[in-house]
Amino acid sequence: MAVYRRGYQRYQGPLTGYWARFLVAPRFAWERLFQQRQVVILLVGAMIWPLFCAVFIYLANHSELWAGLGGGFKNFLEVNGKFFLVFMNAQAVFAVLLAALAGPGLIASDLANNALPLYFSRPMSRPDYVLARLLVLIGMLSLVTWIPGAALFFMQVGMAGRGWFSENWRLGVGVVAGFLIWVLIVSLVALACSAYVRWRVVAGGLVLGFFFVLGGVAKMVNTVFRVEWGSVLSPTAAMYQIWCDMLDVETPLGLNTAECIGTLVVLGVLLVVVLERKLRPVEVIS
Image 1 (tube, rainbow, N blue to C red):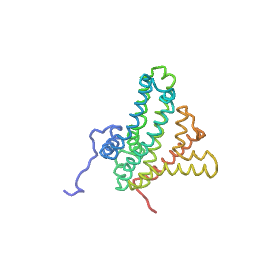
Image 2: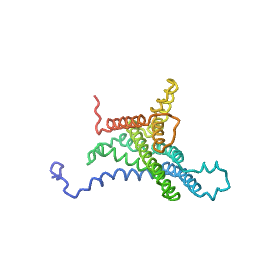
Image 3: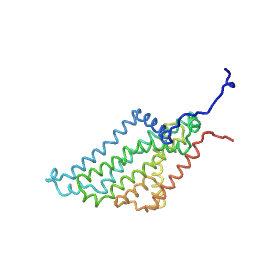
Image 4: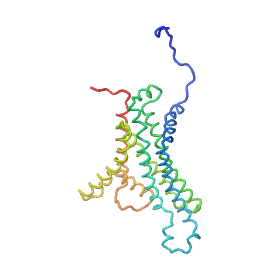
């Protein structure tokens, strides 16, 4: 039968819910990521430092194991804001490496193969697409950031007791909130680089270069103009200052926390603008 003689009718069957449709893209993306050997190896490697920190917490709460040692060692084995700050700095590096490895393939492959019209022809808008890809990275980076950080905090609470919790509850809030901010910034950077550069390897290098180049620019501004406010231009320095304020730790940077928050907000807005301009189903060339 010829095509023009066929009668076509709109689908009248049951429709799935919004969240069921929305979670399809993250679910398959997570499956593909966990099938990559490099991603799995990096995830396993990122768990080594939290294990050492867990051993540190255990030793700090069992004084009978190091009773014969000096007082300096006793001061060293103390779980406080500096301890969690060191932990966050180490895991933040793993988060950037993981985003550089896993992030570029989320959007670059869709752009290279002109797959966006297929996504947007379904009941999925551009915000839904971006949020779905963002959820993939946030879920992946959470495994190496705030989840082990919260586990270490509650491990310390379980060993030290309620008294320690009442005096240091801000540390737990700072670890979770600080990591969530960092995960969001790193995820947006990875998605923006993936949307801006269609080659996966180049996009991964651009993610790493983004943080290192801005850090170098900040140091150059401080050196040339003999100031300290240039560090605000570096997202890593700005995030470090915010973490220090959350964990009540003194920092030698001498930055204004409000200015650091403003820097990250402006950076996040710029990254969203890049995604909005690059993620279009049809490219019009004049």
